[in-house]
Image (tube, rainbow, N blue to C red; front, side, top):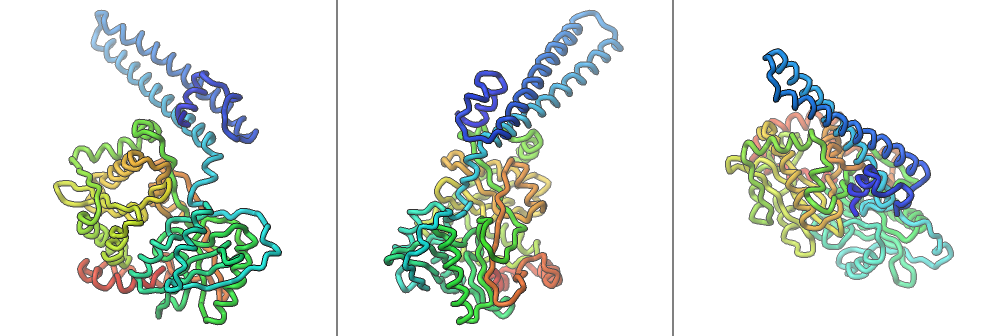
Length: 467
């Protein structure tokens, strides 16, 4: 039974709170009981108002003056408004019930890379190693990942190879081994540039990375070895992009992923969306949008929209070669979405799937299509596609908390998963390689004025050095 069906069954007294087969705290069960009582009052009120409305509409069969008829119409409209408002309240309470019922499972989202607490390796003889791609560590690392849940798609050799080939930066794998078997590790790209110095990032250009380990104690030991290695190699900083909230290192935590647990059918998704969201994406239907999902055959359309939007934002664009390399890799599940209006691409998205989650790391809409609500319509089509493909979660990507993109994603009922980017530093200051840094504002303003063709030539060379 889906969570929405469970919520409805509670409200309609088909099952009781005591019959729920989920692991909930006392506080959560008490909140459920209060929500059920409030929802049942809503149902009772709706039924009463419907009967009241029916009695009034019956009066239209009588001989009435224009004034009497107008008065009845006003009463019907007022009651209809009350019914609609109460139905909205009921839906909000049912959705809150769904949130609570799914809470225990939500703590195990596949992007939460929290390591276990076991300390079974405390006295084990561990070996520290720094491996590079030519050392042929991919098979052993892949085997390690297959045995541990706390990793992302970007920890896999396939993604690391693509990002290395695109950027020209070398991949390093830092590991602890026990009897020649990996028990903790982190893959990193060694990035160096005039602007940002020498850094190790896990993983640049994408949302997730960081440590994969059998225990928090192993993580701490590996960090200690890496810090010594960094001093010897004169590395400015290490950056670990993870969602683990428990590492004792300098950290930045202003960003969050927005993740939606998908229902099993498109009809259930439609039911859980708010009336406002439904109205917004349906507005686009008047302009007869067309959606196409595919691969390399859509790359030119995708890049045309993506590159223009990046220029408009004042951000250097990735080379088309990056997206081509990802799409061509048979070991990475990825595809494109292009929405056209009047046969012109206006909204685009790059999608990649791993295990039970579909992620949208890159998406863009041309400014002129905002009046069509094309972006809303595209996301609705993508969510339907995710359900059709059997994914359990949809990752809207990362946003700065409470920014406009964060609020856009939140309206789809997505839940925030906090990012924690940790640092091993040569000096005491955290790096500020983001558009909010005041010293980049002038450069961003200038970039927005560049012709798109020129931005597309210069941008890929610059952005390779920006993690």
